[in-house]
Image 1 (cartoon, rainbow, N blue to C red):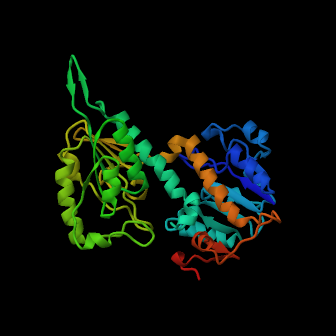
Image 2: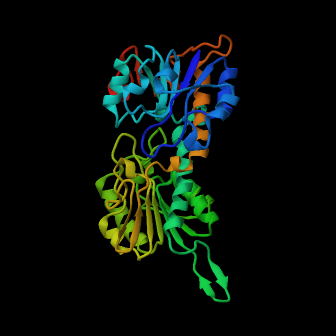
Image 3: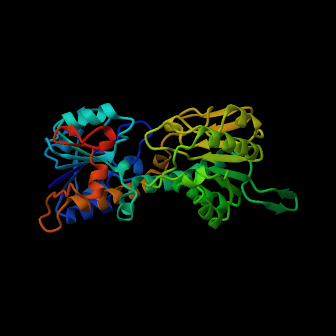
Length: 378
């Protein structure tokens, strides 16, 4: 059994799908591992470290995937040329963005690849160690606060000195998923006064346990604001209006706002309007973690830091990749745990239980067809 690890070629992507640690464990599972040369450089993992772990180094994508049974990537392939030479039926495991890359998924099916989307991992207890959205969002929430601190022209904690007293920064976190909770914890560690909001009332306890204040409109509708999969549900226009009014008043008093709201398969909901931005004090900072899916902030621009009326709006792309070493470590471990489901412990061969809930949740293509129900498959 051969496992191939390809180098990421997309803009702003510095992560890698394996580490020397996971390579050793994959070899222990009976695999031969081939790494494309330079795949780990962005994560401070030179080829030599992979060689020491027992992997072979290949010069280019085609020689990397040649004869591979399993192909690992972080992001979906930018084009099928990188998979030229892959044998029919080979497994491709990556973050594939199925809702936003339907044509690419169909192309993978036509190429005869069996594709698994790590970003479709079911949110069940048994799959927690494979949940790439959680592992990467954790880092994104942490990094968002650091990016805000970098752009903010003042300190976070209260400082009392002989020269005077500095009031603590006021930080508002919008969306209390994994990224939002980590952002709260990080901002609190830096000494800020933190408020947070979410459409799910259950988030209150989590927010308050971290020492932050919870802000939300509580109605009967808000009691049903969470899907069975643990994601935020799309709310009615009436609820959105009430929440927007509350948020507008809250935002005026904040120094830093971090937005994290995403809804699977849909554009990111707008949380901060032009008027809200203009109501903030000059020198304030907004970090839009949803900028890649349309943005929670109407004035945010992907890949840019813009300034509107003295307010900085940070739209950095792929924040986990800005912490590539740790992000790669987490992602590679998620992949390793997923592969344990696919590889028979005794025979050391691929053995897939197509009735397994995790397999059914992540498998997109098989035998030349798109099979996932969310994409119109059977």
